Amino acid sequence: MMRHTMNQASAAFAMMLALCTGSAFAQTATSAAANAAPPTAAELAAGKKIFTTKAAPACALCHTLKDADSSGDIGPVLDELKPDAARVEKAVRGGIGVMPSFKGLLSEDEIRTVAKYVSAVAGK
Ligand code: HEC
Image (cartoon, rainbow, N blue to C red):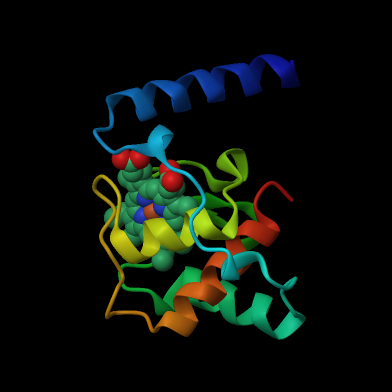
């Protein structure tokens, strides 16, 4: 039963990706610094705050992420995508598809922090 549901969810997700014009599959990890150290508890708390409220529009509005209690369904379910920090940073900095760029809206520090947070908690 569980397995069936998962398969449906990933099929829907694959379809959504296929419909998107973004280059989700053409990406390679770029930022080596992103994975330098595991996030501290303070970084996780700060990242969660950015994810749920500080970013405008908030990541939570568009993304499902269990740890952040969010169920947005405009963007991919981050618990299924499980992006590494470099991939999150790239999306947040540059925007992807209909997701806006947060460059200038979030500081470099905040971008790194939210990326660390998402990559650490996605799928958990
Ligand atoms: C307005 C809705 C919206 C907001 C706000 C938003 N996203 Fe997204 N996000 C999307 C959509 C849609 C995609 C898929 C884009 C595509 O592949 O074409 C996406 C993709 C992503 C991806 C996957 C990138 C990849 O390489 O495939 C990550 C990671 C991500 N978002 C993280 C975030 C984070 C972190 C925030 C907050 C700083 C955020 N998003 C805010 C809509 C949003």
